[in-house]
Structure formats: C-alpha cells, structure tokens
Amino acid sequence: MQETAVPSAPPTPPVSLAALLSRDDLGLRQITGPPAGEVTIHGAHTSEMSDPYPYLLGGELLLTAGVHIPEAAGRPGSFDFDGYVARIVAAGGAALGFGVAPVHDTVPAGLVAACEEHGLPLVEVPPRTTFSGVARAVWQLMARARLSELRRITEAQQGLAAAASRPDPVPSVLRRLAGRLEGRAVLYGPEGAEIAAAGREPGDEVRRALAELARFVTGHPSSTATDTVAGTRLAAYALGPGRGFVLGVAAPHRESGDHTIASVAAVLLSLLTGEHQSGTGAARSSALVRLLLGARREEVAPLLGGGEGDGAVTRWYVVHARPDTGAPDAVSASALGAALGSPLVDAADDVVRVLVPAPPQAEDGGGVRERDGGVRPEGDGSVRPEAGAAAPRKPPAGSGPAGSGPAGSGPAAQPGWTLGVSAPVVPAEWPAADAQAARALARARATRSALVRHAERPGFADLVPPGEAEAHARALLAPIGGVPALAETLRAWLSLHGSWDRTAVALSVHRNTVRQRIARCAALLGADLDDPDVRMELWFALRHLRG
Image (cartoon, rainbow, N blue to C red; front, side, top):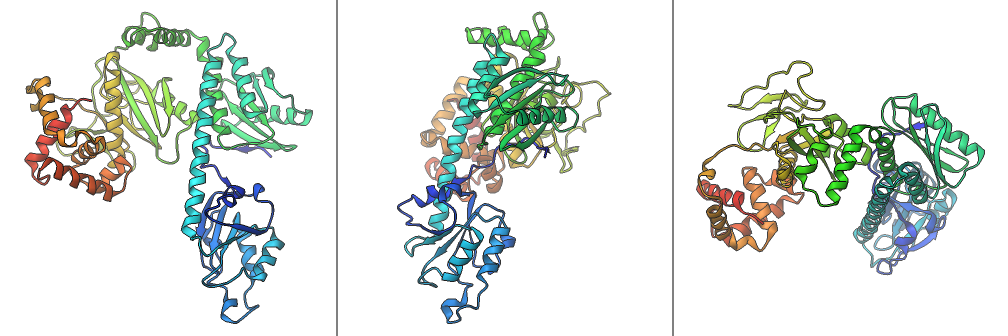
C-alpha cells in the first residue's frame, strides 16, 4: 500500500538487544523470547505499574523489579501474568527486563511462561546491576549507533556530491546511490519512462510497483511516498514541483539514515535535471570551479547572483536556521532555501546555512534586532514593534523577493523555523556575517523568537581605535582567556541581560552550569558582575576581543 511520507531527519537509531547482552559489566541474561539479534530497542523505561501500557511509546526495554507482583508476599497465582505481558506487547514494548532482589529472588515462573507465550524477550537483571546502569548502557549504545549513522550519511553525501561533479552526473549519482543502498535507483521522466537506472535489477513485480509509486507522487501534493512489495522497500521522490521528474529507489532492506541519503540524491538530481541545465546553473557551477581553483570570493560572487555581468547583487545575507522540531534534512533545507529565494544552502549538523542575495541598498528591519530596539515577532508569527521602534510597514505587492520581509528588509521569518540573519555584507565579509548569523540564531532560540537580525550601528565603542580596544580587551579578559567556555558563557549571559535560563538555552547547557561558569568568571576577574558599570566594560571588551 502506498503511503505518503513527510521528509524528516532519521530518528536516533535503535540498538540490538544482543549488543546490550554482550556488555559484561551488566551481566544480563536472556531467559526466553526470540533471538536477541532479531530484537531492536529504542530506549529503556522503568515502571512498577501493574499496567504499563499508558506509559510506553513502543520499542522500549521495560525494566521492573516486580514490586506490583504479590507472589513474593505469599499469594502465588494471584497475579495475571498473561494479561500483564499482553499489555506490554500491545504497547509495542521490545523486551522486558526483570530485576531479581530485593523483592524476588528469581524470575517468577508465571512471567517466564507468559513471555514465552507472547514472544516477548525476557531478560534477567542481576542484583549487582542497577536499572539506571542498564538505561545508561542503552543510551550509550544508541549514541554510538547515531555517530556511526552520521558518519555513514556524511560519507554518502560526499560521495554523491563528487558523483554530481562528474562528466556524466545523473548516471553517476544513480550508481552511487544504488551502491550505498544496495538496491536499485531509477530516474523517471515527466512521462513516467525510465531515463536512467543503476543497481541490481529487481523482479517484474517490484519494477512495476516502483513505476506506479513514481506516478503516484507526481499526481499528489506529497513529494515523497513509500511502499513495500515482495519484501522490498520502495520509495519515490518528486524532483521539484511541477517538473515531473521522479527518483525511485528499491532496496532489500532499510537502515536508519537511508531516507536522508536518498533525499540528498533527490536534491542533487533536482538540480541536475532542472536548474543546472540553465544559464544560472552553469554560472554557479563556474563559480564553484573558480573557488576550488583559488579565486577570491569577490570574483565569483557575481556568478552566484545570476550570471556574468549581473551587477545587481553586491551584498549578501547569511542566514542560520534551525527547525522548531527535529533536525533538518536535505529536503527541508532545500525547501527553506527556496522559500528564502536562494539555492545556496548548506545543511550541516543541526543548523542550516543559507547565502541570500540582498536587494540593492538593503536595510535591516522586520524581526527582533540583536542589539537594542527593533521588532519582535509575537507567538502567532506576526510582527509587532518594541517600545521605541518604528512599526514595520506592509510592502506593496511584489516589492521584495520570495521569503523576504518588507522591501529591503532582508529574509523574513519562515513557519517552522528559527532564523538568525546577518547584516547585508559584501563577499569579502562573508565569514564575519557567518559569525553574526550564528550569534543571532543563538539569541533567537534563547528569546523564543522566530527571527533575530544582527543590527550594526555607530556607537561610543567606535570612538576607540580598534587596536587599542583589542589590547584593552585582552588585558581585561586575560584571567579567563585560557578557557574559551568561560568567555563564551559570559558573552551570552551579558547579551541576555543576566538571564540564567535563556543563557542555558542559547548554549545548550544546564542552568546550573551557567551559574557555575559565571561565578568562576567573577572570581577570576575579581569583578562584581552585579555592577552595571562592570557589565558595560566587560561587554565592551568581549565585543572587541579577536581570536
């Protein structure tokens, strides 16, 4: 049956029960159930409830000491083991871990029989092993699996990008994708015919089902669909809206991360089958080659703006973005770039970076300013002025590019994303703008704003020569200069007006860690951080500190 799928980052990969049982420090022993190598665990949960069903999400190793089982209290046979295990299975529990001592000296025979009847793996947890130790081991194994998955995805992305740069890019991308997924990759044209294919030839039933799935996505709003036929996992990806090209993938099995790898290939093929064939695509390809051969950013920037001789784009915004839920994948990052009006997108880790051309004489506006004043989007995504700031005016229709705010204001807030936007800069200042966007994004997350802009303006600090300001900053901050985390925390804490909670969010640490670091800064600097004059001087120094 065809199923539409919303592209998203792959969840944390599960771990095998066999990997957990192999940990000698835990001493776990499987009593009954299917082979441990066939059982996957998505987490660990402890419950002494007689009916844990409402508290399970599915895939957990449920840990219990049998406190709710009255057999040890002298009433054997009074507990419904079959009903208990049936509820765990109905909730999707992956396995049951039973801790012996202090309540039960052995695993109750009734529980063993019920687990065997329902096919639920039953694991004995020895007295020396704590449930928290088991849970920690599960998360450690999941973290290792996630790291391995990210490495696999990164290697696949690099391989696909290299394939796209070959003289025969479309066949090369298909071959690389088919090899990575150990299956079949097919490019269908607007009429549904196979244009190119690579990988293992599937049977007639699978081939027909994959072609049907490709036709399905071209006729529906969803850009992705999946199916399973004859034990083969099928997926289809529409390559751009309204163009009719579709990437079809058939693989005998599906590993965590396969969807992301296929999505990357879909984005590359979308470019190769569309924009790359146009003059704009050729110009951008030329810009990439020149950069790789040592050209300066200033020399290739005109090519990124739309081709040779296009002098309209002289300044650029750097945008850092994070989705409000989950982690970004190639498809969602590409969609964000399209919404902002730029195909120049870099999706790495949890942050998507977009290089957006600024219209002539672009000015800051429309969003939360990183410094004083500005406007702040309300919870519903609308924009309202803060005290002392001019209310943004609604632009006339067509006054700005797609994804922009009022005319000349730069990138606008996007539903489902948190954005940090740099000041408009010339190409030579792209690295500085990248740092501005990163700081703006951190502030946006801390203040729960949809968008924060970096706003440069003259101030008293500009009256001091930069060299003297930097020397003063290094001298003042020397006691904490050897610990980058202290300087980073102090900068964030001061920028957020001493808020422990918002600083913790911006730095992705616990609020107690922020308190400890700030106390350490105060001790090393010998300063009273409650004094506004001290805060002002430290902020001045942090702004002028380089390296």
